[in-house]
Length: 237
Image (cartoon, rainbow, N blue to C red):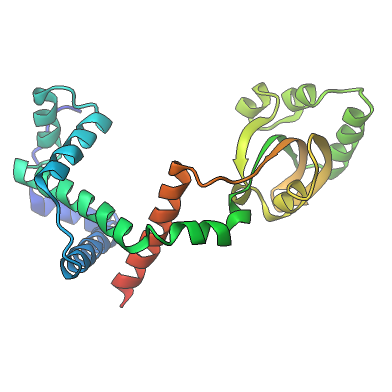
């Protein structure tokens, strides 16, 4: 859709109400006000250079390669140039406030929660039939069947089945509690005995345990988590 539909602001607000989304908008306003208030008290401001950098990042992420593309995007989102500048300013201000409040706490949080950032490289198939899972486990153990062949035949997720059950690098916290307890207590490479969880019976070929490192991406994830937790507290006060 390239044209702005001719709906009034009143109609838009009414649609937000009847679709149950008005609370999301109100929460957004509360968070924006909390950020602005905290930044003002800490004398955190946005420079012209930071505004320009922020604008470039939005254009890049939204694939606005030409001025005409930017103008069309503004019209589609009912934004004026002043609105666009305000949006950029709020984004930059939010990032600067997060850094000011929590950048020095990230390493401590990483050390405290290090176990949560463990990762594993594995293959996985989840079955509804525990007896079948056990039968397949022994067939693989005895070399009668490969994990890849088993996954191709029995995996209910067709796309995962095509990949032989390969899930790649998986975060510890993305695994079921029962599964991660076994996975991260095991020594790879290893075919694990069937694991029961509320999702079914898991057959897992564990390839590698990856120890956590505080990469720039993980640093940003932790920073964002801390900031969002803080922000939620501000709007509940």
